[in-house]
Image (cartoon, rainbow, N blue to C red; front, side, top):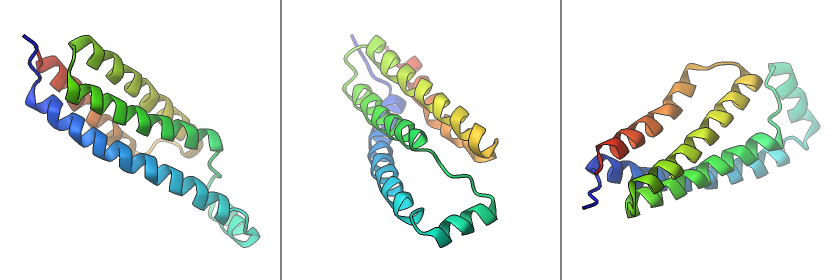
Length: 131
């Protein structure tokens, strides 16, 4: 009998919530930055502060991560099979790692990047506890 662990269910629900918020936030950030960077004074202020300009590719990867987080959360809540949860979670983790590597090449390593690995670790621990 398939039995989902409570940790997997809780993490999946949180992933759905945060994934939806992440998708909305990334879309808003994309459009806001495009508007802000059209102003020459803002471009000069960003350059003077040494803030690198974020590429559109990073926004695309961020949206993919957030959407895949929602999908992995839905798969975790539905829990049809342990294999489906593993596949969805693995794709999500690969996208997270790609996003982290890309972000590190732009801004360098920041300690807060480690926090983005907490949800995948708890998700897979919940997957491991499930039967």
